[in-house]
Amino acid sequence: MQLRISPSMRSITISNGVVDSMKLRVGPALPHAHQPPHHPSSTPFFSYRSLFYFVLFCACLLPFVFIRTALVTLEGLECSSLDCFKRHIGPNIFSKSNGNSKKLVKELYEVLHNVDKEKIQNLGKLPDTFHEFMSEMKTNKYDARTFAVRLKATMENMNKEIKRSRLSEQLFKHYAASAIPRGIHCLSLRLTDEYSSNAHARKQLPPPELLPILSDNSYHHFVLATDNILAASVVVSSAIQSSEHPERMVFHIITDKKTYPGMHSWFALNPVSPAVIEVKSVHQFGWLTRENVPVLEAMENHHFVRSHYHGNRASAVSGGDNPRAFASKLQARSPMYISLLNHLRIFLPELFPNLDKVLFLDDDVVIQRDLSPLWEIDLQGKIMGAVETCKGDDKWVMTKRFRTYFNFSHPLIVANLDPDECPWAFGMNIFDLSAWRKTNIRETFHYWVKEVLFNLFAFLLCPKFLTDICGQWSCVGRNHILHEILLCHQHSHLNIKSGLTLWKFGTLPPALIAFRGYVHPIDPAWHMLGLGYQENTKLDNVRKAAVIHYNGQCKPWLDIGFKHLKPFWTKHVNVSNDFVRHCHILEPL
Image (cartoon, rainbow, N blue to C red; front, top):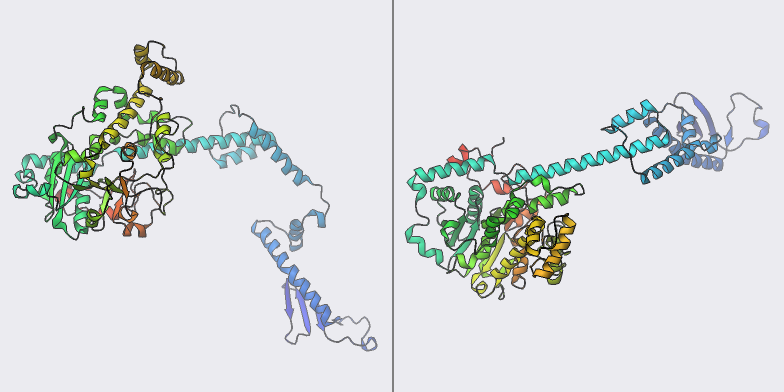
């Protein structure tokens, strides 16, 4: 529909685009005597006031008609403008309404509501996709109730498939995070072989003339405990490149017995001058025995604890688990949490008896700024400087509380801890070893580690073992086991409060307890967390941080690492090194 106004504003023509429907002339009314009666070509006259009301009416009506007609056209319906207009205005105006549509919708709602309360029985094979469901509906022409029942059953079936897929994703991700990449395994083997065949790879680290520096407190001492050679090289390389005084840096690398030859070879063949480095193995510390390390004792003596961390991961899942809970369970059963290297930080005063202050680093960090000012921080009599994780911009990474780590349904936890207390992070911590030696932090830490291991042992072992202890009951199910463990505690005064674990995973929870009152908060800009699980990490914040930490499953050396966060780590890999090139590290599969 078109509305044309002449340039002289004396005539208005309304047409449908092809034929003029009406033509109006505007002007003063002529006397009836001069107007030819019933002349076929005569044009009706309107006053300006009539024209104003008419144009106003058209201005309101025409857009409405156009939009409603356009909607029907987009929907693919074939109808004239008037028919489309009638359909959208509704039958109440242009035709009589029988209310069939409203009645049908109301009945469908009632059927769906009633079916939602019913328990779906076995309906045979259900459609796998929504397309199959619609095809089945069209073919079989079910009644409303059958339609609603099969719709609900299909949706429930699809939800189960989605959940099963997400659980499988978490399981595969856990396996990927726990596995050793082929390139890193190759690097370790080649360097170990080099250690046995190349005298330069076995040279003393550091040289004899630099040995006194290892206990010189005028230097800045960095401690790193790891069995990942490539990760260790990145930590050391990034720290030296970022330092304003690399000649004052001393690195103490501690690894396990099997990794020691390869780790030693790497740093012997790739000097870090002007910094100083030493590489030691845990077997070189004779006092690190199972009597002094509760985790070692539990692993050697209790098959149940060992199988819990090294057994079948898929057995951790239950039908009621959601993917996030399942991921947490898998992470809790990671063998890394009971490795000696992961517990070494609690022995720092004994490992370095002549040092007053050290900076302990995890192997999944990258240093981007000079860390020398950390040695100048006044810890105000505290033992450790650490970044708190209860305040920050990232609402996932920096909103932790004690309730995040501890099981507050356990009476021992409820009696000793506050769920709203603010935790802190491992990964980059400055320690005052002189002040630490005056406390019982290590004893407190070991007490709680033994407590959780004993609770785990009690939760996993066969009730027959407790029958031998208490002589009261037999194996009749887990709920009864938990009840009888409490009874057993009352009679034998065993230190078991429940079959439930005290915390989820890691060495951080017992450290949070052991270091309570001994932690000095430092500026969060020193240590940015979450690059191993927060995919939405802001790159500007990453660039500004002094230390970035890839804590989480998605390590930068793994294929599951986040692509946009990897370059901050990979740029410190020595890709020109022959061993790195021959092992095809960082090359796509």
